[in-house]
Length: 329
Image 1 (cartoon, one colour):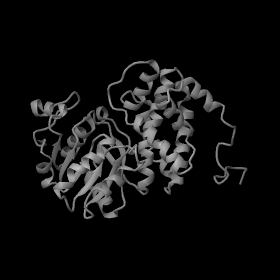
Image 2 (image 1 turned 120 degrees about the vertical axis):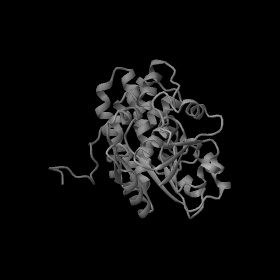
Image 3 (image 1 turned 180 degrees about the horizontal axis):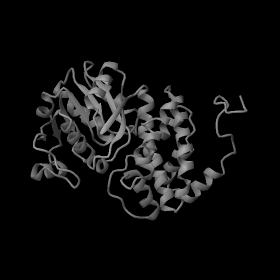
Image 4 (image 1 turned 60 degrees about the horizontal axis):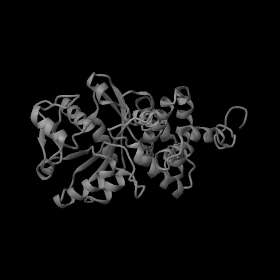
């Protein structure tokens, strides 16, 4: 398969490395002037990996996409619409777009697949590649499980078959909406986990995982998706890599935030926290943990006061009546 990976940050370069490793013909694109691309052009390396000579490097979007049958997108979520606007004049048709990042557009609350579908030719098909995994661990040969989902069943099965290997076991997604919302929102839970670490309250992460998953399941259900998606690889299955891992940008950002230390890397959960407020109101879905993260980041609320507020919420049963437990059927 001829593949162009658009975005040469840490994850995009890892994806290019991985797809080349399993036998695909890969070009890695970076925008003109990109520091990441310049580093690769100079010595084919960044601070984590070295790209083999078999991977092409390009800063020309037209030539990089001209012969590619599959475009893997790995750019910051809030820049996706801008990327699609740059691709429009190229008249791409009969291509497969694989969105390999997690997020929700802040201004509109739209999922990333919706943005791609709305801004490309109808002959093109769209899929998402989601789930746990860190660049550092994949490079060490540590395997993980991920999920590919799409409204196009043939595309989904073709990609899973083409991308699976001994390093990544892919599953067929069954709920595009739920998988996208779950994947994006786990970054907000990751920031909350960092708050707890920074305050020395790591023991509360168990409760955070349980209740965080529950509120995201409520949102997915309110939006028309399957609430069980929140318990799959897109969300709960990604918690170890997001809530506990030292490699997690969102967890580390949250920890640094409460400690008053600057954090220079991108933490997508900061944008998603705002987008989730839009969706919470639009679908009348209560998101207490995500709302607390939003208040801390955007309204300068005190983290300790937000934790106290969560503890003061009305007491209730752990599971809603429609989810019967033993002795209460």
